[in-house]
Image (tube, rainbow over all chains, first blue to last red; front, side, top):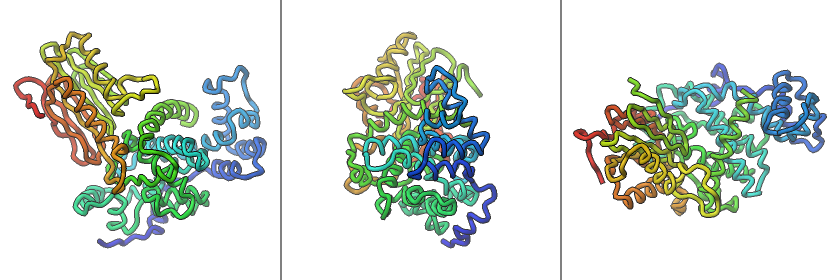
Length: 287
Length: 176
């Protein structure tokens, strides 16, 4: 099959490409710095009025159960922890475009969001159980793993049926069908976007290798956590769209993370419990 | 056309109704949607099963979550409305699987196939009449049941909405 449009053209010609607010990116970078403090993170947050309000709302929410009202941003950062503040900033910053329908992938309103947030929550549980990498970094990688779909969606409209037929006829996975039909897959497009945003390498790797974790030469634990998280949230039906579960699962990810197949049910159970709690909280604060 | 009460059967939910109702089980990936009907009592039940079996070392928070707790709980709820298990007919859908596991992968990882098998095993143990099933594959499904016609449909993104079976007498077909 012929491929006429390059990844660069896809990204440059796609109007309404997703973006992450500058303050959210700065908070992410600051929280990864060894010199980060509640005060330094608060100084970034204060530059974004909407984010400041959300941080204070979350710190004062029933979830944290404080008896007194917090109106000081650095104190709110201390109460929430820098990682929660960073996650809130990213979730709130990506929600406006993640909640939109992605018709190219047959995803209705909110479905991409539920899949991304679900993958983030599941991957975080996997990271905690494996103790191989930062839960917090894995959450972010899970949230952003499918950003390539957002850019590619419009180019897939009216082609999804043909790609699915092709995948079925050739007995190949959907990402392989994307590569053969388009010349690249949503993972490569996501990697291109992530690197253009200067996201941390671990997140770029998760975008590129989340369906082929064995190929990740670096940051493999993060990629493995996202691979398993992606599988679990898909299995539970979160944002299946047209490509559904047409992806391979690599058991090697579990092995490398020191987990056993017998644990998959327990991880799934915990994921569903936590997802409902997290989703309600984040939608209340971030939506 | 909507028929009676609209019941959305979310993950781990059990819903029952006597009389007109439409049941919708959304977003079935590896999960199973199971519907049961006692025509004489005009009582319907539906459960959205997530996993095959409850954990031995953890209390069950929602009985509908597991095949081995959800199916008996749904039947008990239907009995409260006057249904009799010996008269029930059932249909199930879901249990999707990922495209491919590694060649040496453990069967424990195939949650969809295990959910379908656990459900069928429990139903066989109860000598339940299974009218139809649509399980496996790699696509998400939505299962819809309209009590007035008895028609059970399954919707997929690309297959559209197709009739799986009719659980009312006259049009009913019974499969193994």
